[in-house]
Image 1 (cartoon, one colour):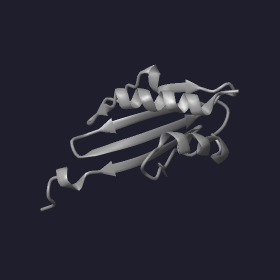
Image 2 (tube, rainbow, N blue to C red):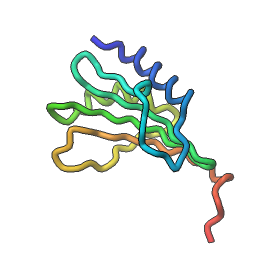
Image 3 (cartoon, rainbow, N blue to C red):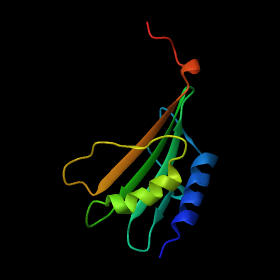
Length: 112
C-alpha cells in the first residue's frame, strides 16, 4: 500500500524546490512523479511566471481512467491554497489533469 501522505509531501517538496518557469518546456523530471503500488501514476508540478503560479496534478492509469475516489485524497494533499479544477481531456483518455491558478493582479500588465 502506498503511503499517500508521505508521497504527496515528497512531490510537493520537489515541486516547491524546482518550480518550472513559464513559458515552460513540458519536460518534467522524475522527482515530480510517483507510481502507487496499485498502478496509479501521479505527477505534480508548480509552474511560475512573474505574475502567476499554477499547481498541476496529473493522474494516469494504463488500463482505465482514474476514479474520483483515487484522485481526491491526492488532490487534498497536493493542491494547497487554491481550488483545483479538472481540465478537459480527450474522449477515451486514461489521464485526468487538475489545475489551480494563483494570480497576483498587482504584477499583471493593465488591460488596455
